[in-house]
Image (cartoon, rainbow, N blue to C red; front, side, top):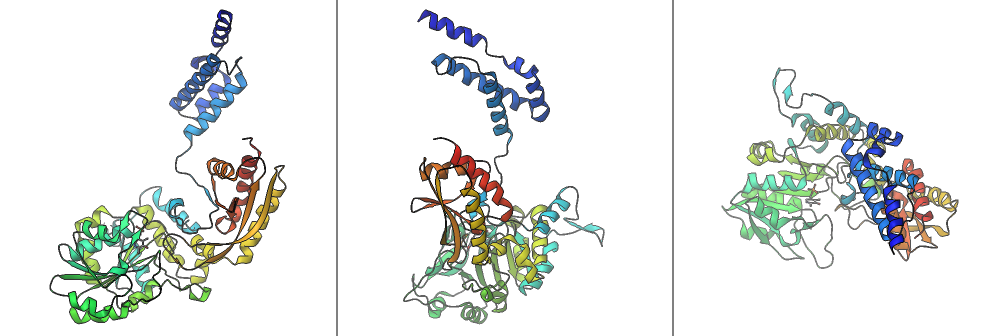
Length: 470
Ligand SMILES: *Cc1c(COP(=O)(O)O)cnc(C)c1O
């Protein structure tokens, strides 16, 4: 016991100090590449860890190479960003948890160009006077949607909140019971309504709402008739709803504005591609809706944002609400929006350049080829795993096209020496993170959402995950 204790003391005494490590060749290199406090704290942590291993008897000598290696790992971990790119192998294109829409090259370039220094964000260059930040996107939105005026805010939830507040504060907003939606937990229409100070006036039933249900409740207290797109669900069977045309007619007769929360906000008609169920913003504007709101980063494929388009008089009122300032967008968002909207001026090119559209409209054959490429690289790895290309179905996600199944191909991995749950976890925690899904005891990596430029990184992440022992 005594000699064991003395032995441990001897090993502990040979542990390097923080100072010694800082002065060593490696220490100099770490300090030149990383902030001092990160280096010092990482060294301290690893020395402390090693000390505990020696005291517990798990470690019986000081392994300098091992310590240096562990410190390097810790420094790398501590100096990497929390928010970082991941590989989306879920097949869900508009994945809210994974950042929804990637930006086009032109949008990214414009964000860089505008954000590096000063810009004419709120400066009217022609007049040499103060300008307004919304002017940069208004013209394009008018052209693309046919609306009289437009305004962009932080996201669609903010757009709905702002519209309700500015148009219906303290007054009634009429909504069909079949449209009182919840989108992703934190957006529940009745709650947003309350937050905007509007009084919810429900009409109809869950499955059927008639025009006379609306007619019956309209009165001097009614500020707005609101229609909400059922983004993430469908009601089927014995159903009836009043379409936008019917509501517009009623609104015109009663002098009540019609607001439509479209959710996704499709600019391009996707019907020629076999995708139905999402009306275009232009169709809804043309039908006569007074105010239309939609997200910037769903089907539109732009940055996070909430677009409000509609009649000038109402948009002007919305813009003047004090809340508008609180939900205004930054120059980076405007730079990205303007570039993305510009892409839509050439619809064919937009499909090629906007990642969200491109990923949704991929031909199954294209996806199958990507899956086959991934599978053949994985089969070359010295790992005991069964690898197969399987056909599957994925969803658009992000509260878009809930009933449209997208045929896809995935690589199914059944690892030999570890469980499929373990493999899923290793890939998720690896660098880069690869997010897949488990189905029928296999890990599925859906090739739809894996970009060709990511395949190499995906394969090396999979190699590491399959090689490491449990
Ligand atoms: C997604 C969605 C929202 C919320 O939009 P965000 O841009 O995520 O704030 C609101 N309404 C509908 C109908 C939606 O689909």
